[in-house]
Image 1: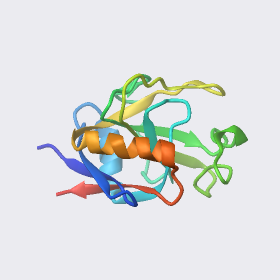
Image 2: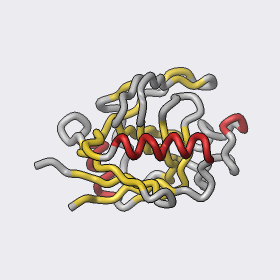
Image 3: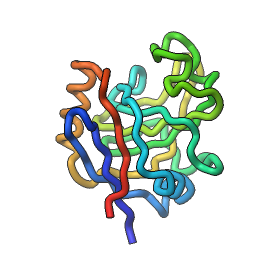
Image 4: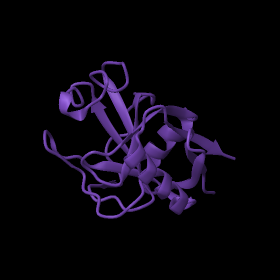
Length: 166
């Protein structure tokens, strides 16, 4: 039986529904599901193009490792990236503190891709494969419009929230 989550831009009042990819990414889907709800400030992708994401202190008992990875996510993909605080400490990333989370150690980046032509390459680190753990099934056009508004209007004060959809 499929499991579904709701992904929301809270201040903008926009949500979409995603199916967890339990068969393709079982460890990652389970790590996210078991930790829900999750919410933190949202950022818009600087390099990947059509991406919004949030940075969270590691929340799973163990990192899921690589599974169902991509460097070319498509519209509607939800991805997991694992970093440590040194990976995101370069001032060029523009976070208000060294990691974006206020923590040191492991950081989880949960991302939503809302448009085409994404490429997960970073000037400091090279290719950054992400685990595709979910696929948006409802509300992508509305979420994409809100993501464009986030890009042009700014992310300050906005949060990205992931919750279970029972």
